[in-house]
Amino acid sequence: MNKLIVAAAGALLWVGVAAQAQKSAADGIAEYRKMLEDGNPAELFEAKGEALWKQKRGPKNASLESCDLGKGPGVVKGAFVELPRYFADTDRVQDLESRLVSCMQMLQGFDGAAIANTPFGRGEQDNVTALATFVAAASRGLHFDLPQSHPAERQMYEIGKRVFYFRGGPYDFACASCHGEDGKRIRLQDLPNLSKNPGDGVGFASWPAYRVSNGQMWGMQLRLNDCYRQQRFPYPGFSSDATVALGVFMGVNAKGAESIAPAIKR
Amino acid sequence: MGDPMRIRAQAQGDKAVVRVLMSHEMETGQRKDSAGKTVPAWFIQEVTASHNGTPVFSALWGTAVSKNPFVLFTIRGAKAGDKIVVTWVDNRGDKRSDEATVV
Amino acid sequence: MMICRIIALVVVACSVAGCASAPSPGELDRRAIAVMQSSFRDQGIAKVDRLHQDLGQQACSGASPPPADTVKRIEAEALASIRWPAGGRYLGDWREGEKLAQNGRGMTWTDASASPKDNGASCYNCHQIDKKEISFGTIGPSLWNYGKQHGVKDPTDPASAAIVQYTWGKLWNSKAYAACSNMPRFGHMGLLDENQLRHLMALLLDPASPVNQ
Image 1 (cartoon, one colour):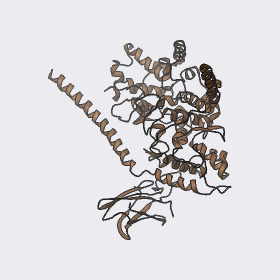
Image 2 (cartoon, rainbow over the protein chains, first blue to last red; image 1 turned 135 degrees about the vertical axis):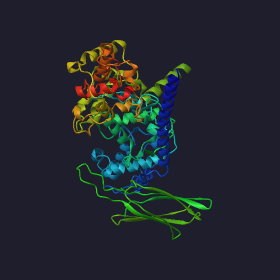
Image 3 (tube, each protein chain N blue to C red; image 1 turned 45 degrees about the horizontal axis):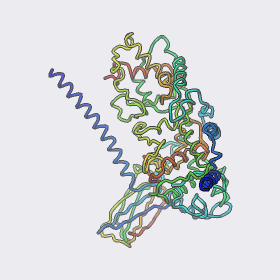
């Protein structure tokens, strides 16, 4: 009987220690993340983006200061939390990065298709990331309110939903495999439920972000690109309809959530 | 001359808290690129800061400091309007100086 | 009259907003497939033929599960697809199994080959397995004490046959037991070979495995 009590107590103690080890690992990570928030290198990209917005560049030697991001030419504040949206001049629903490329083409004379084909982190793509960081920063603290007034916007939401649940590839993964339920994580990385509003500063509301682990600034296009890579899918085109549709789906679901972009991630 | 630093200096009572975000690759010299070649070491070796011309901070860095370094320090006796200048020098001899006013 | 005015207003509102021409759910399904086909390109070992969906992938592409008869069909076909191990040997080396469970590499466009020997099993991404490993996911259930909890003292004992076969089947083709399972079909999709699966079996079922301590 005594042996049983000792064994049981031992088992309980061991479980307690294991649980404590678990808790302090999670606590340690939370502490590390808090420390990271002070001095976000995203600010360096924000400053670079602001300079690029104002600088006369490209074959037309013009700045981007009259670029229409959805709230009128030159209006930057508040634009981020209403994207993606429909644009009459391109007759397309566009996300932030594709709209920036459109402006670089229309106003500055750059070759938009060439920029879209440039790998992330190189050449003009690097500038698109900095510009996206600058535009996102101008909406820090504002709440998502994507328009759904145009039929193209409503259709993109429906398409985005279907793309979100599309299962394929050798692993049978969909976005929903990781992001379709509450309270899940992959290894120790918490996963926001993107099939609904995941809350302030989470998911769609936290990209662009600076990733400390690889020292890179990532816009939503690169975030989606790497998601698809890990889903074992083929390569999604830059600002392809699938990626823009997902942006509409996530952005509309996040209605009312506060944007903390540009954020900092592990 | 490298990319600009972001400096924020805030007065808090009888001192000022200075935050500096530097833009630098900080290569350790241990990494290999995709072709297998070692990426040469390239890192900030010395950081100094002055308050109204007087040196107040100096640091000697090695390869343990990671990319885009962030520094926070406090200067006693600094007040709004004072000038802070931060300078870094790297192992290639490249240097960068930026200044900010305490708010 | 008032009613005519209201109807007129509604008609005007509808034509402005285009809701009279809103596409049907079926049409939206077709457009979404077209979007998927046109939005991707080949990269490395990840080719666009990966977007070709089989019955299960297609039926499980939605927020709600497929109808019951489709579920039955998917599970039956999956069960029939299972290839049982040569010589009836189900277990390998749990040490190798742990290495495979920890390894999340393989099958992406940055991986050089699609050969099973270059793939990991990614188990810890979704599951708790050995309690010593605190970095585990929660997308799948905990597998701690898996063999022990199923009363497996000797995996070769006929009394354990049912659980041993279920476990192999689940690893080979998870959809045999749950049509829309989140778990990849490691054997059926050629992600891991027989020997690798034996090592994972040992990790879960060998009484000497740390999982069953």
